[in-house]
Length: 245
Image: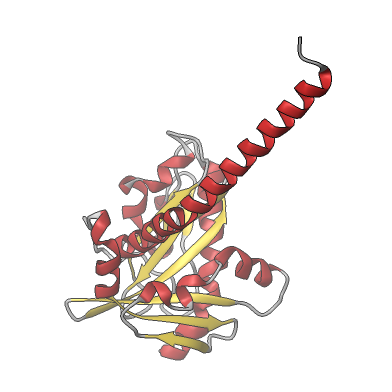
């Protein structure tokens, strides 16, 4: 019969070996995981700009084909970095941690945000990455604006744990296609954002419906999270947008 000391030493060795194997596996897999996250990020940016049906293995080359410039803006709307190279995934903008930068904003500290310029058939769109909070975790996505920097061309949304059939419906065309053609500024040039309305945008006065979409039925908290995300993030780009007009 094995002694208690032997069993303890054996268990300790097994734990150390297992930990070493897991650590090694994590290190080996990390580059692949980071690459997959980068590809997902590029794909979402492209889809928001209405560049769809891109094969996964072609995402990086397609991204570098259509994204002609990436910018980093400070809180005043000043361009602090501009990249027009062939490897957009290596630009400073692509590496911006939106979660950290928006946290700085919440603390009234200086922050930086990325902006992507996409060109398709001679027409430019401006893609704004977004991040906020849903019911069970973060929600995030991209909003593409037309050359007037007012009209929405397309959006993408995603989440980490919203309820299937309810809040998770923010990823579906039924929700995202409502945003196309909506405007983030009113006729006087004031920022209005896009409101996500429980009961439907048609409950608003006619003049306000161009700045609103219908909330997800049964997903009120997630819908509110999307509306708050758009308000909080897109308003941060207003100083830059106003300088371009």
